[in-house]
Image 1: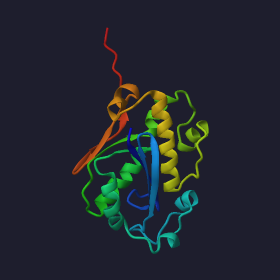
Image 2: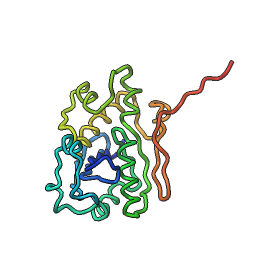
Image 3: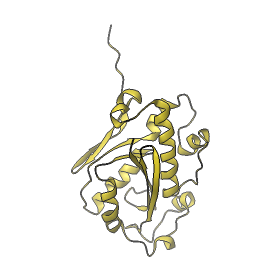
Image 4: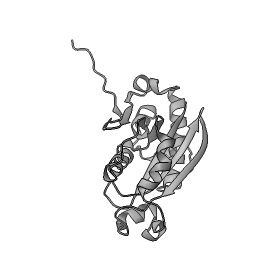
Length: 202
């Protein structure tokens, strides 16, 4: 089972304001490494106070960082044609799409899923499914709300979740996790979501 976990931190509530991206690479169930990049948002030097309070990244921290379109030249080859997983993928992949749109960059081709969604199938009945709660449940260390740390913790969580559910390939997600794998491709996307089960009538 090979996949990459991805996490974004943003400067504002606007989805096209990433200030950090983190990637963790998993091959044959083993974590091979983590990479992260600070990003100078197009909104620089404006950051929402609320966002700073969450991740601790300030305008001064990204003053000399490259903008997203420069970082994308390095990031895109790493994720293209791979399987990506994010915790709350609706957020992270909307950040990716909106930022690509802002820079008029083409979407990559990749498949993705949401560990928040499929964790609900693996550990049913929990009061919450945020990353902090699930990491605490599974005794995974977490330095929350920095992109590298969150992507690494997500990778550890995903390994445990997939092994618990007996999932050995992306093709098994719909049946074993009742989860539709999302797709991103030039010109559009299909969201990762819960697979609805329909009972036969009568």
